[in-house]
Image 1 (cartoon, rainbow, N blue to C red):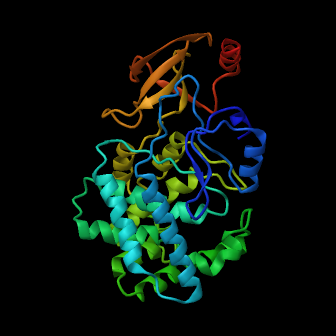
Image 2: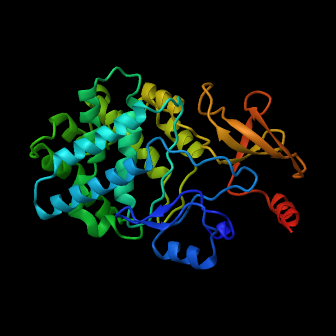
Length: 358
């Protein structure tokens, strides 16, 4: 995150109540970056000076996300206290996500989320819900099924309220602790199936989202079609979001690496047909990603295309010798394959930018 010094913030940073901590567009200084690090943020979105018009893209509206994260937080709080969940609030949050996705004309989606260490669980639950509902597009599910899937996905980790001392720890679990935390699946199922207004299918998402097709999952070691469709969808969403999230003890994998790992699990642990469907739906090179093309040129991803998640539109900003060029757009493909994803513009390019700004 230190590389963000002097850059403009591309997406507002909010606290767990939805209040703005840093507004979109502020120029980041060391004091701001220190405050973010202190609050547990490991990464943020900044404006690329060579593509300031490229917006950070999210599949759902910001207010929808804030409302959904607040709903998850409240559901977990009530469950920890032994109080009933406000299922109407859960349904309202899920409906808002469904409506946003239904009104989004994009064929390929990306999620733009900022999460601190302390907010990880709430952001993760919302992301898994969004990913599941994106995956469900084209599967013929009606509104009722989408609601059941969404409710199960957004509450899939509710059983972890019994293991917060382990889940909230800023470090990996011991093998013994991991075995204990595995019980969050059965605990979550028991919590949800007793909640008025929560469908049994939704509760099974909590129970089965760690099951794997080859029987290597938990808690029951189910195989193949023994695992419900909703849970097979949630398994893919859960793995993908976990891999693309920063944690105190490891750095997030970029989307293209996470997707490659999921493809490696397809057909054995994860449903192969659903993984293929997910690949077509999710942007593995989200808008704003800096890439090196196969011919060495440097480009910024400016949008997604119907050709699929691996073929975004890009804006070439530097040639193969890392010399700045007048930016121009092209669609990736045989003539312009993405060879690598870069964390930042190469130093030579940044040096030229700094000189041109003087």
